Amino acid sequence: MKRLIILILYLGIFSIVSGQDLVERICKDICTCIGTVENMDSLQVRLNRCAPISMEEVWNSTEDIYQENELIMPDDTVQRVVDAVISKLTYYCPKIKEFILAEKKTRFYKMSDCETANELYLAGNKAYESGNYKTAEKKYLEAIKTDPGWVYPYDNLGLTYRNTGQYEKAVNYYVKSLSIYPEGNIALQNRAAAYVYLKDTDRALLDHSVLINLYPDNPEGFLGTAKAYYAKGNYDTAIDFALYSHRMYQAQNSEYVRDTEKLISQIREKMKEQNKLDLFNEKAKRYGILLE
Image 1 (cartoon, rainbow, N blue to C red):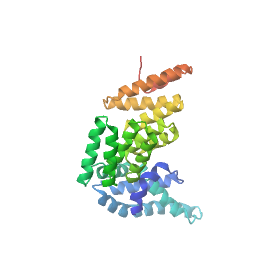
Image 2: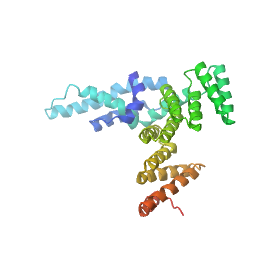
Image 3: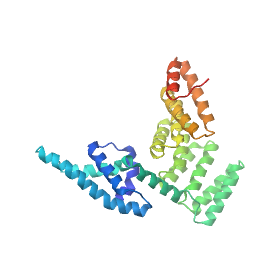
């Protein structure tokens, strides 16, 4: 059952399964059975206990239907349902996804256990803040060499390369960061931004879709998606994501509302050029946003 812990996050994002009603019933039954999760060990124990029970109970009710209708159940159906439950469990039981993400964030977004790596990283931050990007690059690379499994210097090195226009290098180091911590929102968000600069908007949109699936309460994924669609010239779609992220930032009283206001104004001008101002106004009204 450890396979559940490993696979449920990413398979849940990308898979499309058949027998959705059956899978949904099993997943929701597992979710109810699990109850409150205190730590990863308790989650593993509860999954080990709940998953077989829920699958058996729901499966038996389905099997009765097959028998009543004198149907023969395909041999591979059980395995397909098990695979589908693994892939969709976090979708139908968000508390599991939220718990795993919170646990992994605590584990990976922290200072290194190696004091030398910390010193090098902090020296890199100091150089970066003063605009001395060459020194920052050097210190981050030394920190990575000292502690190759620590994501912070990878992320900040990627940011250094972004700020110096070295977008391919930035992408490479975000890839390395994500190989350690695949759900890292910092690397996902910044790699997507680097892809936009490289005019690879399809990959940028993919990273933002992962961000939205993993962190639906974070407006960055929605704003980044709006920017990517804007770069593609798809203003009709860009405005939906821009307005949605704007409303999220407003609810958070975030200073980033200025960024969304600027983007919305830019999209408005583009849609005006395309004689789509009525569509823009309709969408803005739908989101409850009135612009002068």
